Amino acid sequence: MIKWADVIQFTNQGNPIPDKRVEKTEEEWKQILTPEEYQVTRLKGTERSFSSELCSLFEPGIYECKCCSTLLFDASEKFESGTGWPSFTQPLKENAIAYHADKTFGMVRVEVVCNTCDSHLGHVFPDGPEPSGLRYCINAVSLSKIKE
Image (cartoon, rainbow, N blue to C red; front, side, top):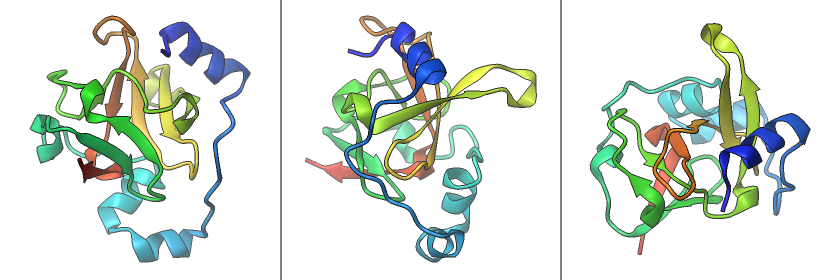
């Protein structure tokens, strides 16, 4: 189980090695993503809070990266955070996510990206439920849900 100390260690000392890498040109990404998906995933944008039905969707399943289909989160780790974005307590695998310091907007946060294709997913915070205490606050537009 990943805890906040692990997140900080990955952020400062290097991320886990992904199972594979997917790299495309910006033009290739633009051809396979909608303008909103491209803005969020490739340009580190953010969708409006409460703009996605994924916030209130709690059926079993797996969430994958919109850009490369890497499996990222299990619905069993999803919880209602009240923030307006889907929130999870853990990634599916330790090496599915990469962590980067984000010092934009006068804040210090930890950005989370798909470790396979560097797609911007959102941020992780140390204010989630136990036992991990983590809240992965994820843009719904960066995810696809696979029904079980």
